[in-house]
Length: 111
Length: 114
Image 1 (cartoon, rainbow over the protein chains, first blue to last red):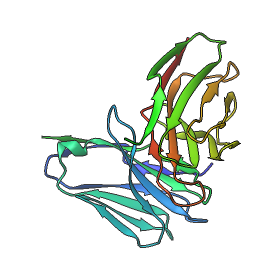
Image 2: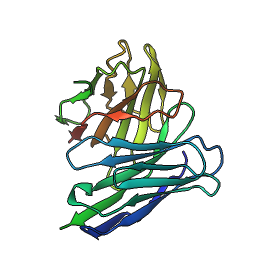
Image 3: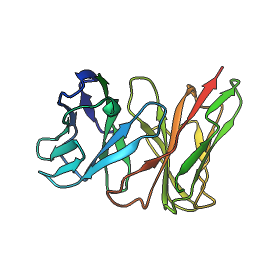
């Protein structure tokens, strides 16, 4: 079982502020890094699947970067809105499609 | 409207009873997965199936069993051998297993065993 860690565990952000948080994973045998958003009372939804070192992906005001050599990925939220409140999960994927999830970063955006 | 359905949303059982959680998908995906969530922990893989009539154990398969007789369906049975069955269970699917494909999740079933 691989060690996938996310920090911080939770954070509170004022509406309009930007924030970022980290996912760290083993740097050896890298295949894919996934980010999911999990809103309360909903199903987790995929944000990004990243496979290349240096990859940057963007969806609306959310973006992610990937450093496979040092084993980390950052997720950025620019100009946070209340609807960005969710738990953000990262997962280390192998070539079989199996995912090892981190415990998540819970983001609360207050108006 | 394609997606994954899990039923029921809440399930209560007495200790010592087996219980089966339903997972159905109409996305025509080959691969399906079962995860368990416990407070403060990441999702943990119980079983996965790459194709019909085939499945493999995940990281925490003890006390669970699955079947994959149809592409659309991947039921999970929580047996009386599972020591701590009370948890939130999520089913997921992806277009195929071997590749960096995103997974699509169902709404989950919360199982309480007393």
